[in-house]
Image 1 (cartoon, one colour):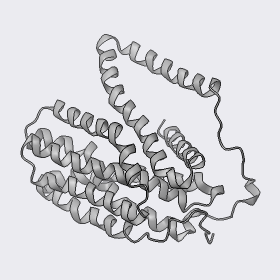
Image 2 (cartoon, one colour; image 1 turned 45 degrees about the horizontal axis):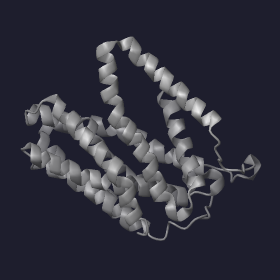
Image 3 (cartoon, one colour; image 1 turned 90 degrees about the vertical axis):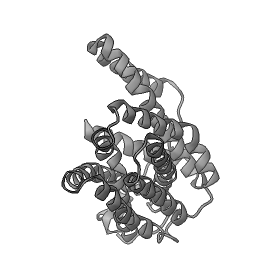
Image 4 (cartoon, one colour; image 1 turned 120 degrees about the vertical axis):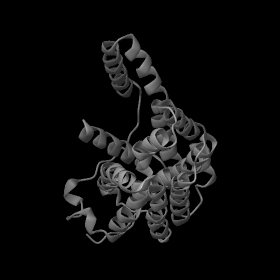
Length: 286
């Protein structure tokens, strides 16, 4: 299931990068994320309601919506890329031999390790350290997704002219500061403030990162490059929560959130140095 989801995400991102002009890719990826976050806002609420009625109905509705999505894609006129690359014309060798790609992957990983604390140590911190009810985390998650739905496209329209180094470093810095500031959060308003900060970073960082990986990839290998981009998410999602819970259990929440700052700043420093890497059709020595 997870492998199929990763393939779907990669294929969707590759399609978006093919359809959107270079100067609009950040907005296009933000619009794609809007759809995802809108589903994440509505889905859990609807799923909870259906589960109260009948767990069986939950799976029936899930199957029906998936089938409906497939019908829409088949029936509605849709113009995808009109050209396909000859596999024989593809450069040989692994894309990881491209130093630009390898540098970007390594630069992006630390801030992702920080970011995925929101699905692991953050709810533990809210409930066990601050004494909030579990529903508080659900409310904060809803705030995060609603801000993205209503603001992300606009934010990326306003910042679309920024060089990649500026947008990537700014997004990584805001995300880092937002999570690090939880070391000082003791009230609900303070926690909400940290969520607003790292959500702002998320809205700038992720569309810019997807656009950047699209830009540094040869058109014939765009799916492969974006596949490595999504792979880093998988690595961070696997390692980040585990490392975070180890630190939380051994040394406590203050140390955990304080450590987020130097770890995230590694990405800020590295991403601020991708200047000159955003030209389309970059040649790669494979």
